[in-house]
Image (cartoon, rainbow, N blue to C red; front, side):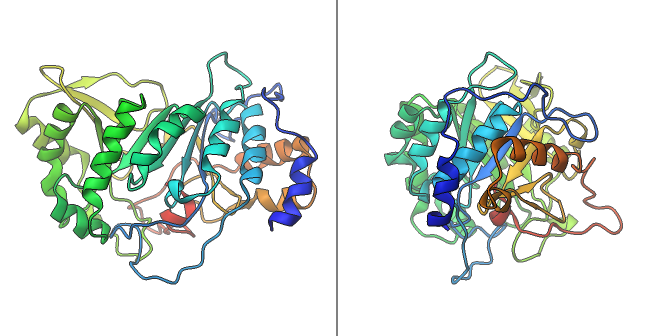
Length: 353
């Protein structure tokens, strides 16, 4: 694929400023789309129980780094202001630093603020990469960490010895100036709901933002049931028992997390509750899979082949027009828990976290 793509990609060189389309990208419901999540690989070195089957031998898909760079340029010209690089595990991807460096040269089309570039990682390889990522232009980092004790951590990830490597990655990110580091914890009843109180103390002592995420039906094993979800109301009640919570205002209108601190102002907790308290009405996100498919929602039943369009020789203007058409189909909301709900056509590791 690389030898076929590269001549097409080089036809329109990467520019330091977005070429600007004059019209901000909006979906068919009038929502401005400013956040793009891009999976650069669906490989992962963990086998988390809420995500992977735990079996080896899966087939993986990745595009050349130059392909992602060109698509990102086009999206930024349409009004994307935040880009999050995900996977799989993005730190496994050769060329990641080059992609961050080239992306950091782009300028959003409809704001004077710099492009916000973030990465979500499991942190296993982060200790040696945090400073190079910061130097390349990374703005922020989020680390997936589902327990604060080694035994529970290993039971969830199914990879021995990872806990201390992730702790080292958190410290390296803080030292590199990528703080405040965000820690994402997917709560899964029967596995790690006992960690809620410990994570509250972890936020306070380690100067990190902890975000609890309700378990969604996106796992490969298709084992999700409503009973496995630890809802927001339960999380809040348990945190209040540690110390009284104080609500914080959202950082922006489309923020997915409900934010809290404790009464003494030490520590920050976010709760992302797409199952019990959906926030679809102000969704600003679109997604690009590692094989170059555009997804308008995590729970879409179809995806749209942007990489294929590019392979067929589309210009940047062609790609912009195509993207505008596809996002008109963005769903108004997901339907988790409703009669007739269908799980998405791909699991989370193949969509991008």
